[in-house]
Length: 110
Length: 113
Image (cartoon, rainbow over all chains, first blue to last red; front, side):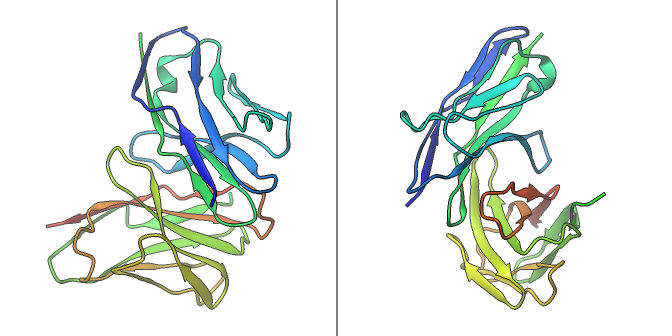
């Protein structure tokens, strides 16, 4: 079946540091790929998505590129802020149900 | 604004009680889902429904029940058979196009007292 593996956390960075959270997937066919963000005590919100190979999703300074050859969808941001502290989930949606990674907790210190 | 409304935000259950979590959406989505999230953990699928009057078990359905009598509503009942129900519960929906975004509610905290 489908699966998503993302970088284990927690990740702690200083403000303005570069962020990478790795995500790789296993799926049949051509799934859509997503990054969701969850702030404390809240539901998940869509951060960005990509629906086909080589697409780049971007939002709020975050980017991720759909790499079919490496089955990856790594999340990056050039300069993180304290307000980016949250849990980040990588997910895929193919022909079946959505599949989520286990989440990566990011803490950004001033 | 369209979205998903979950209620209550906080709920306390005594041993042996059944409790029901409400989930309503005005996005006109066909598919709805219930997930459980334990502290510091990922999401686990409890039940899902792709159309009115039909639903399927997810990965951890034991001790839970659902109904889907209306397109807008997908309530989750946590029964007394669920021995460890303390968790954060998330309702979600998506439209029939399987490639689209999942939209989540704000979640409900259930605590056993």
